[in-house]
Image 1 (cartoon, rainbow over the protein chains, first blue to last red):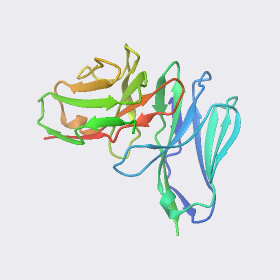
Image 2 (cartoon, rainbow over the protein chains, first blue to last red):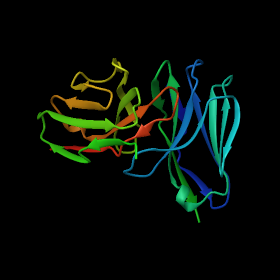
Image 3 (cartoon, helix red, strand yellow):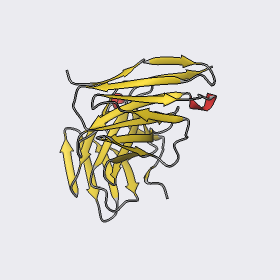
Image 4 (tube, rainbow over the protein chains, first blue to last red):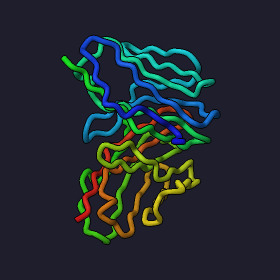
Length: 110
Length: 111
């Protein structure tokens, strides 16, 4: 079992719709969870972070964490063509080891 | 502005010729990471430093070494680059449970 798993996609969503991205992780002791967006040839940029169970909202983005199910998700409301990118889920394992999932390629269709 | 700086942005080396990539930070973060990212793949953790403690991933080849002479600087040494080592190398830093701060990366080409 991979330490952090994502559906690699591609995921195609119409402009204005909600994009839903999912991630599962293997370490029950993980305490911090991150979503990064990466455009081709660029470094990852932070979208959201979440540490506690439940939902965390920031503008059009909502991160959801369920530690019992070892599941974290990212919702993007009112999707825009500029949201088209690869979305990386990252989870801290142990003290400081931070591991990425394989990423989900998202395309927003005008 | 506080930041993470990687040099060079682009590095070309010959097969088997040692190469060093550098990373510096002005954030005073105690943890520094090196990731390797190949085309259409996720960043793969090579190793990280927690303060002065070096943590090597089990599947990181011996060909890859790292040095952290002080809090601000970290180096990635590839002793004998192979064609399969061509990739983007990302340096990142953090403190505690905070999010990672990434540099712009170094794209390595091996000829």
